[in-house]
Length: 311
Ligand code: NAD
Image 1 (cartoon, rainbow, N blue to C red):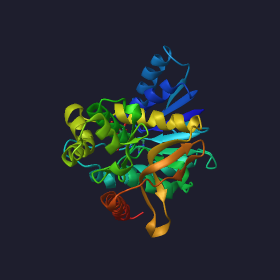
Image 2 (cartoon, protein in one colour; image 1 turned 45 degrees about the vertical axis):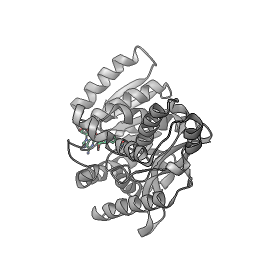
Image 3 (cartoon, rainbow, N blue to C red; image 1 turned 30 degrees about the vertical axis):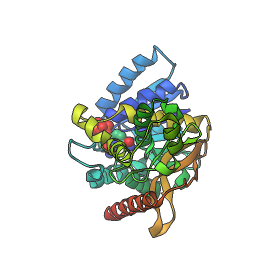
Image 4 (cartoon, rainbow, N blue to C red; image 1 turned 90 degrees about the horizontal axis):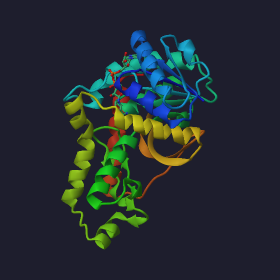
């Protein structure tokens, strides 16, 4: 399996390490418009490969090098500076995606390739990449709220004193400020969250829920304030997604893909079944009226911003 990564900044290089460490790929191409950066990253990661799996890691500043890739991960473009929102990156990164996607498509097999989008604002970039690539929506997959859901699971697991593996809870909607926690469908093991709280005598008030939700929504801002950017969490999310695709695991992941057609088309995160053919099935969990309103709000924000880029 050959995988290419476009954009080898903080995120792209962490993603490259995480993908290498899955042990599932035999070749990784690191592409960046900054060829010096791509070469240095390939050199460094190539040395690390000597300690683990035998993966061929090459640098590229010419798109011909990505030929034969079955998965192309796009992590190029501007990142948030302290105080900026993801949507502040809209026009800059729409230009980056518009530059990259046609070049990628000219060098891959459109019948099978999967695009994994990481660049923010994530959901709008998924819509743009899907439109430019003309690939089926199931094969243009944004990491969406996988990272937000992971943050939620970790925070909840700590307050409930259980493993994050036993927390089944989703953040849905936009990968951005309008994301929301789908509390109604949250379970711990197979026990509804409310029942779990009763049985273990760990009450969870509305205030506690609101605090948890806020911590999840502001996590990226806190990390960016402290270390300038975020990269480890998203690298873990991409590796998880790639694993589900390559192994055809059919895992349920909160990825972002385009649903609907024409003016109604929008990409937001919902639980989706992800395997070798991509994100093939969207699932709709039970939601109360606030959560349903949250989903409508997220969809409207993403659609409005997609219209703003005028593509
Ligand atoms: P960075 O500035 O460290 O790296 C960006 C890289 O993209 C640079 O190496 C740059 O040369 C390259 N690049 C820019 N334009 C290009 C083009 N046209 N073709 C090829 N390469 C190009 O930024 P970063 O911290 O790595 O973040 C990258 C993106 O990932 C940002 O949009 C950021 O917001 C996003 N991000 C998403 C998530 C998520 O959960 N989806 C999490 C973290 C970061």
